[in-house]
Image (cartoon, rainbow, N blue to C red; front, side, top):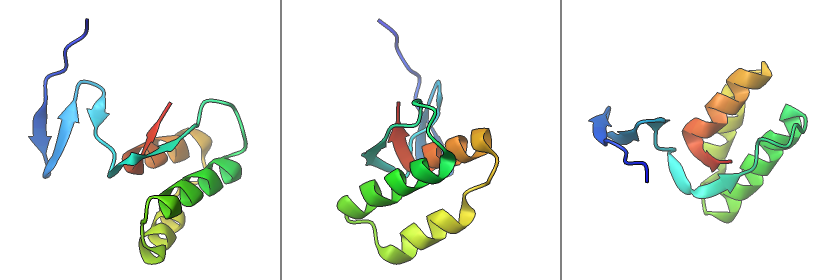
Amino acid sequence: MRSYAVRRTRGRASGEDGLMPRYPNVFVPVSDGKPIGEIIERADKAMKRAGVSSAKRCDFRAGVPRQYALAVDYIREFCETD
């Protein structure tokens, strides 16, 4: 069994594998190799279902990098992923 040390960083809990996402109740699959545009749409729909405001979703979409790996890392800052 793996244990994780938790520490506070900028007001958010963080574990061994990085910061917890801003919306931990929002799950977005990212490991299926789909185009980043489709993954961004998944994230937007999942955040909408979770009650995230349209203004916050718009800010999220505006900040997504266009390079695939950076975009996936960015999505992980906001949503739980596989």
